[in-house]
Amino acid sequence: MAFKIISSAASTSSIFLLLVLLSIAYAEGQAQKSLPPVAEGLSWSFYSSSCPKLEAIVRNHLKKVFDSDVGQAAGLLRLHFHDCFVQGCDGSVLLDGSASGPGEQSDIPNLTLRAEAFKIINDLRALVHKTCGRVVSYADITAIAARDSVNLSGGPYYDIPLGRRDSLNFATTATVLANLPAPTSNATTILAELAKKNLDATDVVALSGGHTIGRGHCGSFTNWLYPTQDSTMDKTFAKNLKLTCPTTSCTNTPVLDIRSPNKFDNKYYVNLMNRQGLFTLDEDLYMDKTTKSIVTSFAINQSLFFEKFVLSMIKMGQFSVLTGTQGEIRANCSARNADSFKVWSVVDGDDQQEYGRRSEY
Image (cartoon, rainbow, N blue to C red; front, side, top):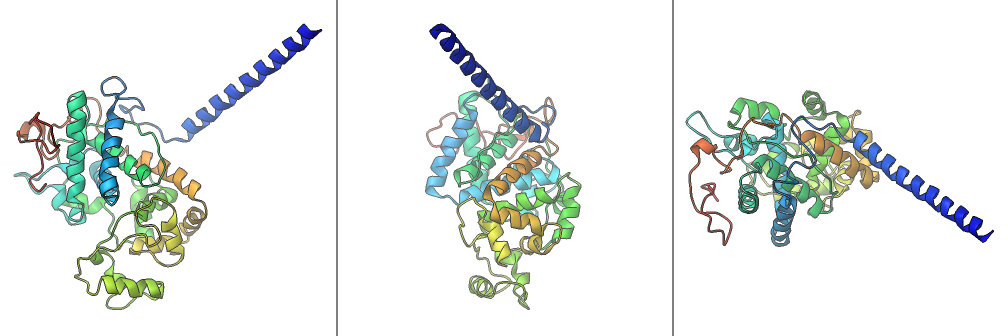
């Protein structure tokens, strides 16, 4: 009798364990189904053999950077955006100009990209290549750095498919201007433009949440203030902005998120609901009938914002990627391998002296 009881209990435990395992497997399967499809040539485990310590190297270095200056996180996230939106996530924004014309960095939308962000990417590349050899692209390092910038600032951690290769060419000025939304654009314009990149309204609102960290340049939003102040702006918010940006030519940089400027959270959307968004696009997202409910849902539910932000970042991070034998694995962030030159490394203590660096570093 005792044997039967024990046997029955064991059987019940086995069934319970099986159900748990099946539930976990089902949940993982559902999660995978909800993720955007992976572009051909990319993989969730691309460097598992060739550079298994890649993500740890990037993360450990960025922890040190952000301990010194957490504001650099926003610069790295923005760099990834500006790379992907123009001609795909291919590291082309890192290239210097040539005899054929100016590089993307010289174009108006990119003039405010942080020089320190470029330096950090180059430092990361030197560390990665010193450990693994030249097997990891700048495009992938930039994507990983953007993800870690979000996570180390308080946002979600998420896996990203890797295997991007670096472009041999930078985009023309016309291409840059056509593909980077101006901060004075309204929601209708942005929704129409980004729909061409297969981004829907939820994607647009979620990716705009990147404005929860970082700073804006006065010249990008003073159209709200001068010559006539927009009547919909929160009056106290507008008054403080005028103190920071007393003229349209002022070069000051107020924070994008007045509630938690250095923390990646959903307070950006709370700002929009209180009419305290910095750019025209920010505020118009709350005014537009297509996006208003999405802004409200993210302001109420941070977990929902994080979930949608992750999906949109994975989708954006696969724009027109180069894979396989396309492009190259660049040795110098600012030059094609054919044009590369040897100068000392920007990483302290690295005596390899085989990697180039940008002249303005």
